[in-house]
Image: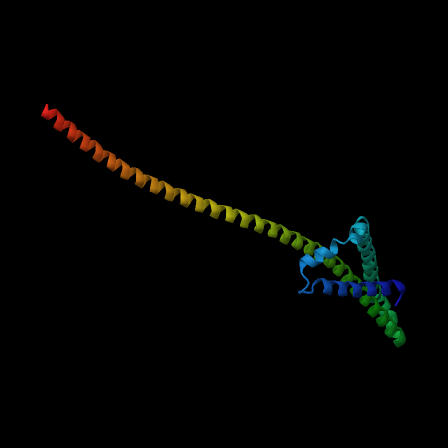
Length: 193
């Protein structure tokens, strides 16, 4: 295997390991967010997009090269020459196998690179959303406590108002009785005159 395809194979294996580590279920998104917020990542972040697109371009170029190699060895021309010489037939199939292997390695490496970047961005989004959710939950709890307090105050005010109305109705009845009593006394004094 040439140096470029050895590098692609190593890159593919590294991507597989990183993707598996990112998908471990007992490591929460908050912990990944803490890891992604380390100072080293903020130092590397200006170079990250350049590196991402450089890797994409390199893998796309290698992918198209692998497609060209597969087409070169799977066409009818190499097979016609291979019919006369059995060793050449095996050699063409070996080259076709290597070209297909390189195509698959490069294709999966390109796919996993895009998946890994998406997984990292989704983990960050989940962590930020959970932080926002926790903040909103705290605000909702505070609002709920304030609503309960206002409801208790409203109930106590209604109770005080009801007691005040009852005491006013009692004093109103007493005043009516006093007025009736005074009117009856006034009527008695008017009749006595």
